[in-house]
Length: 562
Image (cartoon, rainbow, N blue to C red; front, side, top):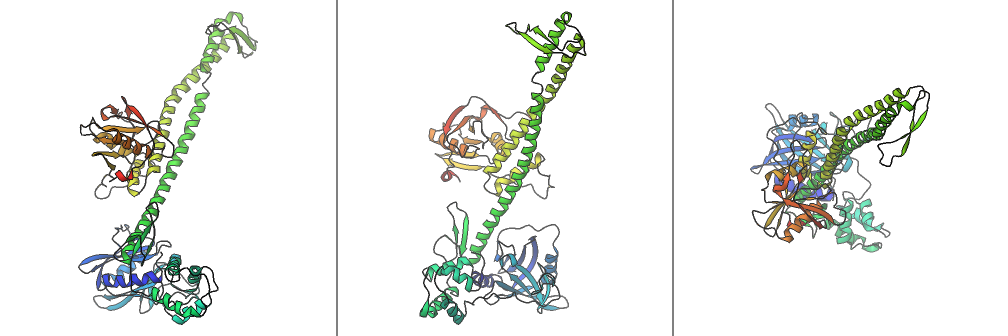
């Protein structure tokens, strides 16, 4: 549910209880679309988040940490100039609109003023506007007369509210009755959304479901009674905040009043949880797409390079034939003469003693023709000697890129991407970053518990290397056969591993592999002592011996994950 006027009425009341008389200690602008105001209120610092993103627009108190850029943007500097040290005296919803006004008592050394920060939470038209005595001091998104002749948002201009839509105010019983009387039947939620101001479509669907029982016929003479019921629902003080999730466990919506879902103590907390997770999903998907594009581009370059090397290798396919032709011509030079354009000689390299036809250059004598074939042979020999190590390197590079793409495909959240990004920087896919402050701690492995045994699954090549380094010689190591996959380790502590534990670990290994979508997958396993990390090899690459293979169906075993 977006922050429509219905939801914002509850949030405004909650913000008043949390932030009134709070002192502005700090203001940051983490991104282009949001401002965070740190207020000391009630004996602790609260973070008021004002977001104007088209999808995530909201005004909430949030505990999610945000980082300020090295250089503060202009609007952030303006807010710091006018609001630093100010007291927040009032938070008010303007009418039944998606606008919250934050009134600050600003006291300086030689002056005192009341300034109002308006948060217009209206989807793609969301904005933040700072005013004093009704005059705009600045706005996050400025519009001039040339851009919008109806409403100018520019310093020095009088602030005006956005133009109202031609809809009924839900607080006005008479307007409500008139609109309901005009309902001729059909989808009532769509009708409410088109005719009542301040209500998002999800709110209208909730009203249609809980108040109107999804009525489809006209209201007729009962329009007044239904208008009262709708008004009472919209302006009720009852709250039951909840966040809904889909079958995959991802947030799908939040409500100020809802029976079901995950309950929260306040509407603010529910909204913050919902939007924070949605933003994390967006950041994750964007970062994953960016990394995927980089790796796919790298793979295309490596495939092109490999194709050229294979083409050069193929051009050397007749190398031995040229050497044999040169030797046969030399051996039979007495029988040949200049001006011949070909000859047929017995191939004494062939066990059957068959003859072979050899093309000759009639402008060259027999010795020169032999040298021509020797030169071709030597050139191809040099080419092949140069191409083969390049081919092996290209194959290794391509396989390594495929392994990083495999790790990226298995990534499920931002923590899964953290070490992968470091790995990409180490191989030059991403530029190196200057280290700031303390080193980022290592991302933990995926951990599972089964039958009093603990086992771990790496998230990427870097973690796969860590697993190999950190386990004991008698621990059991698993990897899919001929597929890129996570390295899985069963911590044995000297105990024999039961078949059901080995089976579960193998199924998890198969799940976190390129063969996840297939049928049964072969998984190799052996003691860690038989796994070797070649010196100078790339991250995630190992060799292993003395292994056995088990055929399993991929399964994540979420019930075992901790």
